[in-house]
Length: 352
Image (cartoon, rainbow, N blue to C red; front, side, top):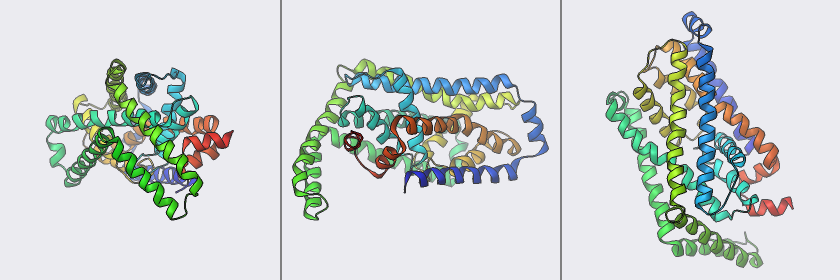
């Protein structure tokens, strides 16, 4: 799937889902509630979005410092927006990392370290959600019993996360085995004449170097850079708290009653599941699923529109900023090549 196609699919699914939600849920009472909304709290929701960006950027800068490298807060904001853009155009929100690794490489940070930094950033969020979701079911046991689908999806996601952590642990504890597998793969590509024979040695040297950088970064994160790693964990918690606070603020703005713990639990489960939806940026599923889940927190005639407004503040604004950042900072041609799998090192060489 090309980058343009991913973006088009994201937009079409989002608009289609939103149109259906509005047609099925909006009533005259919905319009009256929206017109009477307290604009101060809408600004507060925007403020929470800005605060979430700052926490995310600060987390990234802290992880870079833990690796004994440095990027400015301004670049941290740009990396945050790029991540939203990359996630929006790829299945299972997997495309944010390559763009971040590319920008870090342009700033002089080795690819292996860049991969480790972006991986730790993502897994911090997943790890926190891994603790929050069980707590959410403890707070509100009816969430698990309300739908066999939710129960099945959450079980599946936990299994995927467990396998992912096993894979990461293996790459850290057995780097030589990973190198060996990589070299066998490269030699196999040469045998199939996919790689030129004179290039294989260079690729093997590159693999050795970047795997060493990758493992070095993990060691630094838990040794001399441990203080920065702790700061990244705290900023990750604050980031999620800002994101999860948007919905109750929106509900308060239109006079809807809410239980903050219940809204937090519902959003934590929802975000947890969205990481593993196959559509670009979980588009379509995020809008319709949000409406269904938010229907457990508020009347149906408000759940649909609240899902759309919530998605606007927590995702759409960030994705829009990410598109601008990708075009201005990276260039559309490079983003296409990165999306297709070219390495950041190759792209920098191509750009001269």
